[in-house]
Image (cartoon, rainbow, N blue to C red):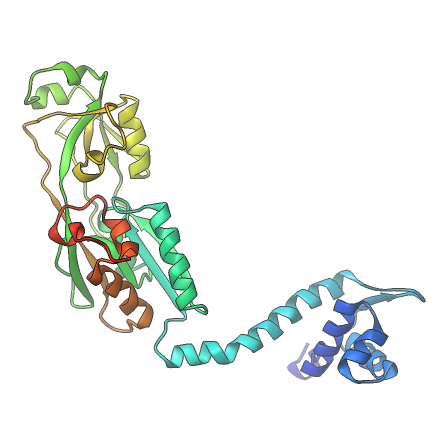
Length: 321
């Protein structure tokens, strides 16, 4: 079908259709639209002829939508809703507010309550921005920024940027402690535990989610079996069940969430502290990015919720209300 022969859907005809469809009455729609009933009927008939399908099933007592009418009502309602909000969305873009904003959070710092609280605040301030939050592991956080379209990351590995396309601000460091379940065989041995003793049990690790950058292995001794899980929560549950051994964030563990269930043990092969930073795009950063960064810079409670696993002066600063 050529463009000239495509069915036409004039805005005024669509408005008339939506009024009839919502009121289920030609006469009621005519009253709302300040038109005669015959004029409304004629416009609907012209629209149906143009499309080539009936939109209503008419009887002497009722007006019901056909399947095609139901679909058109859904689509037309979306169009008019979009047209109503479009001026505000255009103004938002003109004011430097991102129309879409993707935030990626390091698995170690991820907290569902913190994410929900932040989204509530962001949606209230930037009502026309479409928000997306993802979770990534190790170099996968940088990968999301570089290749996944993320605008800002909470917890990229390292304090310094990976290239000049991004800027960073240090958040703090994660100090690690080696843990086993309270009834694990290693819990009763003398410290420090030797590599030979540790090698007898699987290392439980969360896999680096990077698709383009070199993946990192959190901790594993040469020749040691490895169990890979999808996130930190699954890793902790495996530790609690005595399935294997490994390191967990010291600050989170010592907060008392698992009292007596996990035991800290000294080992020869300690894991080095992990510096984490806030990172964002140098080009195209708008008001949403600036606002989220300001939350972390001021120690706001919405930012502090993400920093429970961090050890640093910044992380321990009293949060603002």
